[in-house]
Length: 305
Image 1 (cartoon, one colour):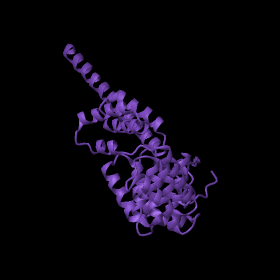
Image 2: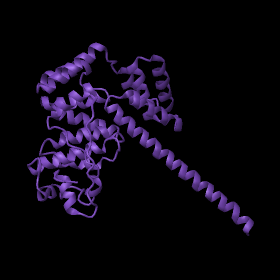
Image 3: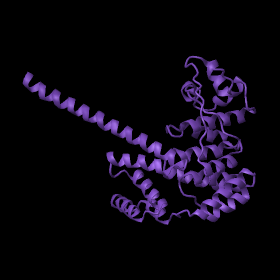
Image 4: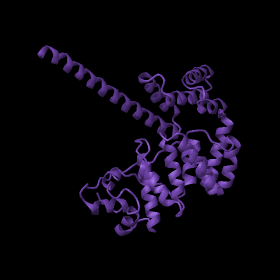
């Protein structure tokens, strides 16, 4: 009997070990992809490419990584690398719409980059219409993935094209639900209008991607402050906003490591960031998980912690 049990236990142990290793590999891939999305959104395609290459070491057929590396090759004018990545994508799924988008993507010239810098300056001068004319001249009606897309949609919304910007972000977010960067941008636009603010708050709550979750928390705080009618609302005003969302029970986790909200002049600041790829520093406020008062203090920005 003992002789029979030992092989069974060994097999069970081996299976458990393999399952754990597979789970760790999936988790590792998810983290790398999350970092790559965040880096691409900030314009750091070189660093994003490093993460995509690490993903392919684990899973050579991971399509998101292959698509990212194909975009990187196209941007760098590396025709041979672009051909290889596109061929691998076709072997996996010939109908992948990303293939056509990559092949048709415009390679930005030094002149294009100068124009985009001009657009950022115009947006910073509160001239979104003039800035948008430049963005459309360079990108048409659909910006490529990455840092310019955020500036494009924020500026378009400020220039009177809010409905179009939201519609495109909805479509992109729906087509690529794993990329929560699009969901963040969409949610932020929705929170600017009281009529759609609750939907935006709900989308911000749903974001779990480590690469963008801090930005989502900051956007939620800013939107909650706007809804409460003050840049430093009272605890009761914040609770009134929280009561309409699902974060009442999770505030102690959600506001762990809250970042400072950006300026309300989003189009101007984002266009400037797109040109400089600067990032916002964060502050490490960590309320007690058992203290309702601490949660209110963090949400309203009045914590002395």
